[in-house]
Length: 117
Image: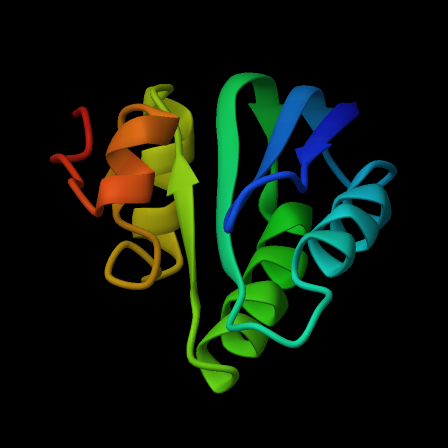
């Protein structure tokens, strides 16, 4: 897994590539913590569009980061295009917490789209 965190804007983006699993989920948690630092409400986009694999290990860091953002008056939105990510979120009942955003720009604007079947 590789992550790139864009901290230069009011809305911060964490871009994850490769695989997100038991071994790499702790790195995601660290990047998400970096993205929500500061005194302002954190607005974080997690871009999973270049992810090749994700298992349920990533859900803990995503849920914790989302809760932390909401508690400070911000939000966390997830960009994904792969069907498997939508199926995973649906299987654990998190599609309402993490609606699908097709692009980083759509996530920044709050334009979510239906999960691909």
